[in-house]
Image (tube, rainbow, N blue to C red; front, side, top):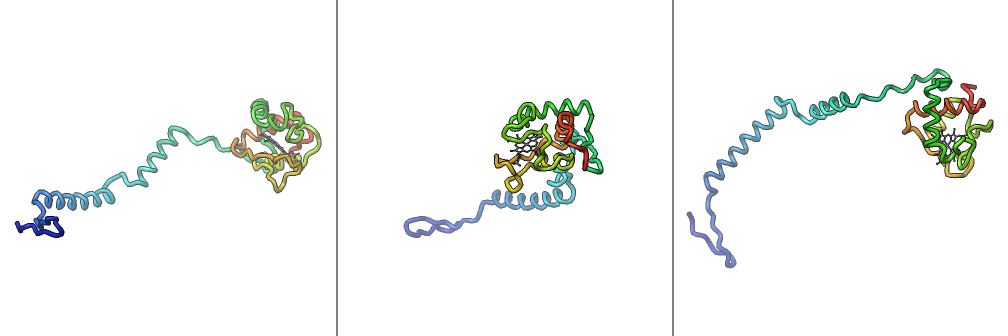
Length: 176
Ligand code: HEC
């Protein structure tokens, strides 16, 4: 052991690291090499695999929603005249749309949906688009804040609301 030397009143020694410390250092190097080799080539738990496993588990537990009702060729509502959908659609309408279009769809902030006047088209295809995508500032005609997009409800619910509306309004037509 060398004599500590003094620098600015601080004693500084230049001792070698103790052997146990060097051993720990060496072991950690060896372990890290082993870990890298194991983790990258032999283990089954790299992040991508773990992620995929977890996604698969989640999907098994919560199966993806049924695919959206088959789109009809002319864009007409596949739920037209479907009694179950009409009932469900009425419920969705009352819950969500009635706030703006009135409890009987005769209009409030939003226009009446049961008269023969359609601002943005009266075919299933157009109405479906208007409800799903909403009517933003660039398209709105009434200047009453526009129509929010309801894509979040999913196509099935929107078609169901339309099926109900069609029972109230014969000018909501299947196609041109
Ligand atoms: C926040 C209020 C609001 C809600 C909620 C709302 N709408 Fe609207 N909707 C409007 C407004 C305002 C317009 C008119 C947009 C314009 O100025 O052109 C409109 C327009 C429409 C149109 C076009 C009407 C036409 O004459 O072409 C349809 C169809 C429609 N809404 C259906 C729905 C349905 C179905 C729901 C429920 C899922 C719904 N709306 C919920 C405000 C709303």
